[in-house]
Image (cartoon, one colour):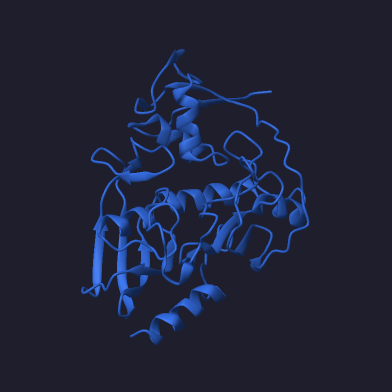
Length: 305
C-alpha cells in the first residue's frame, strides 16, 4: 500500500518543494523524493508540480510514496571482514572479486547475500524497494571499506552526507607511467560511454567529477598514488586516471590488453572512510591496508627500479 503524506507549508516564505519535503520527511532521501515527484506523485494545492516548484506559506501538499517492493535475495553464509558494527552501521572490508549487489551471473554470492545472513532483518529498506542498506558501492575487483546502514534513519543521514560530499574517501592505486607532478586535481565530467554501454567516459555534458591524485611512491614504469574522491561517479577513478594517461595496473576494462606481472584484476583499494556517525554525531575514521596482491606488486615494482 502506498504511503500518503499530507503537509501544510508554515513559517517559510518560499522554498523548493523537494527541499521542503526532504527536511520534513526524514525516512526518504532527497533523490528518492525527486524520483517520486518525477512520477507524478506530488500535488500542491491539488495540482501536480515539478521538483523545482517553490512552495510558500499556506500551500497544501499531498505526497504519495510507492510501497517498498519485495525482492527475493537469499541469505548465504559468506565470511565477512567486519571492521566495525553497532545498531546503526556496519563497516566492511570488501575482498577482491566480490560483487556488492545481485546481478546477472551473481545471484547468491554477493555482499548483500552475506549481509542478510549476518544481520537478518536489520538492514535499511529505503529508496522504494527492500534494498539491504548499501550506502555506496565499489567495483567487484576493488577492495576495501564499504559502509552499510542497518536502519532507514542511518541510511538517509549517510546518503545526505555522501550527496553533499561530506564523507572522506581515500583510495590507493598502482598506475602505469611515472607521474612527475606530486599532486594532480582531475576535474572532468563523466557519463555513459556513447560507443560502449559497459563503460563510462569523459563526456562534455556528463556529471561533474573531481578526483585528487597524490603521489606516494614512484617506480621505473609505474606510480603508487593516493586518490581522494570529491564526487562519486561510476568508475570515476578508473576513467579519470585513464583520461590523463595513467591507467590502473590490471584494469580489465579501461587498462591495457596485457598487464605487467600478468595481473588479472585492477590495483585499487578503498583504504580510508571517514564520516559523522548518524546517531552519535561524532566523526569516525576507518583505515585498512591494501590486499596481499597489491602489496606483492609493490615489492615487484621496487625490484625493477
